[in-house]
Image (cartoon, rainbow, N blue to C red):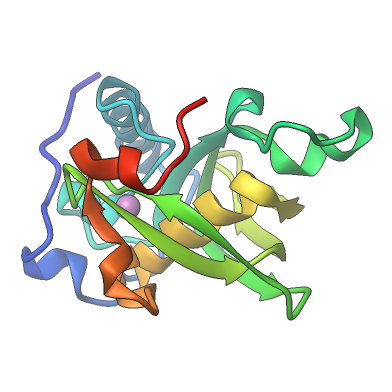
Length: 182
Ligand code: NI
């Protein structure tokens, strides 16, 4: 496997609409997904979209581990806040609730910054896995946020473009002024 170079904000590949994956079961797509996973883990990210490694295809990898879910949730509410390591080709999102939730986001293509982004809090998403089978899940919390963030990359959108209030676009080193550190 290979750790790939990550495109940073300003590279045109991050601003274009990515192309569908013709065959999610193709060996070259599996190799691409494996390299994306290795790159994401190396960079300590929760997700990565193919345009971020200069490949304009509708392919994302992500994970929503339990320790990034909102603390204080009841045990039986945890399930759709978390997601295993997932590869999805040609994903679509359906918004299931008018409710929006604000949360801090970062992006491997916007290094060093954090932004407060309001997003729909409850979604259903569907995509094709590397085995050619459809994956459909309902997601809330951090899980819903990371999925929407990654899918935005496929339409040429970075999280600052989703922000209502750019005073909440900050350097990580200043996060202590905004994010309570217990
Ligand atoms: Ni990102």
